[in-house]
Amino acid sequence: MAANSATAIPNAGMGAGTNNASAIVFRPIGWGDLDAVVDLFDRTWPQDVDKVGADMSRLISRYFVLHYLLPTTFANGAFAADGTLAGVTFIRVAGEAPQLDEIEVGEEMKALERRIDADPEAAKHMAALKSGFSVELDLEREGRANETTMGELELFIVNPDVRGHGVGGRLWRRMQEHFAAWDVPAFYLHTDSDCDVSFYDHKGLDCIAHRTASETVARLGGSADGEVPPLFDDMFIYRGKVTA
Image 1 (tube, one colour):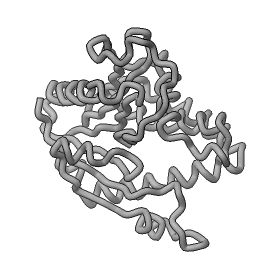
Image 2: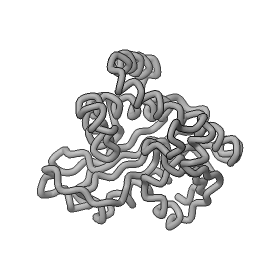
Image 3: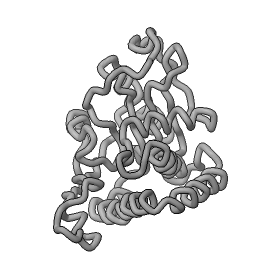
Image 4: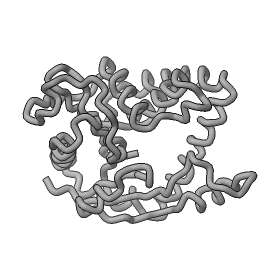
């Protein structure tokens, strides 16, 4: 899941200096920043709050942030002058050690799964989301993503309150610089139609694999009423050259 939707979201209390891109500070994401990342993720992709409730939505969001963080070799955060998280990129370089301890991340994911599984509606929602992982692996094989690249953009979110002020562009450039420092010639990313897919077209990336929502549902055995569940969107893999 690489880019957030471009739809504007009302201001959520960002400080006065947040819209000034020059005031943004970039630094690695640590455990102490996890709550802020989860808040931003859950705000961007709320997990069917009407069915699972706000608290369970946040737990599911936390699980998926950890899922993306588990293999990440560099998690970079953009912070406003008041300390508010303005955006993040999680990247993975093949063969490099994860930024955070894999055992610690994995143990928290297991604990979250136990809490989510205790709620039948949340467990059903979570199972549907996780079923998409097999489709992502199919797309990686179809597009030869891991054979033709050495890096992956695991997660890319820009706080909607600073969108249009250059934060996303600066995060993107820093991502490229980090890939270049590891001698990565090309990278790939997963995204879907719930995200701003046109951003990657604009950046000159190539779509190397694509599956529609209806194809995904058919791949997973279909739905009882023949309709595409709202959990699924068209899925894409984009491949880009490192330009830094």
